[in-house]
Amino acid sequence: MVKKNAQIIIICCMVSILGLVSNMSVSSLMAAGSHPTYTASMYESNPPFISSADIYPNLLLIIDNSASMFDLAYTDSSTDCYDDSFSATSGYAGYFDPDTWYYYNSGSEKFVSIDSGIALTAYGSATYKSAAAFGDTAVFLSVDTPPPPTPPSIIYFAAKGKFLNWAAASKFDIEKEILTGGKYDSANGHLVMENR
Image 1 (cartoon, one colour):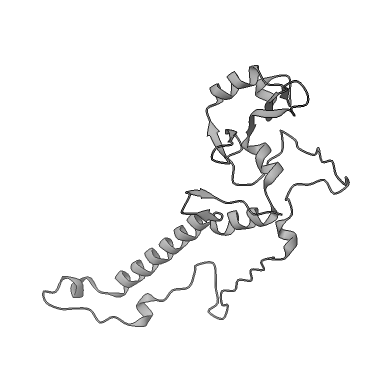
Image 2 (image 1 turned 90 degrees about the horizontal axis):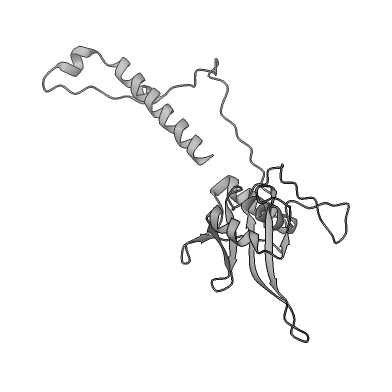
């Protein structure tokens, strides 16, 4: 969105410059020592799709900043506590690249992107998988199950960005991504998700 707005501004500047050049005569530009007189009308122009000067630009942007924006963006409201509405064929907006594999690094407490070859190797020994074939899966994990009374622990968790967007993106995250690119933590060099 920002890139598109920048392109529109550049095009408007180019139209203004072309209008400025067309209002000056070639002889005044070529004359030695003479400087053209600039007027405000040289810098004004109406977009070509507006036929009347009586129509003024208008933009209304309503942004929701209520507490419900911190709720997860992709949930099945028909279920109370179990949501299995994820679909590998659907698109889910969020901070993660949908086609990239990520694993959870417990040391840095964040998801780190990994090569699909590394994901394939880890998938082979995974305890739980979301599909029988690697190409169809979106998430898998390996669990260490020591003898009781020691509780099991997760050794390795990996998921595609599409699944992580579905599982973690809040409505506010998507709104911020569209408007500003997201909330960026410059001290740690990454985007920060905001949800309840």
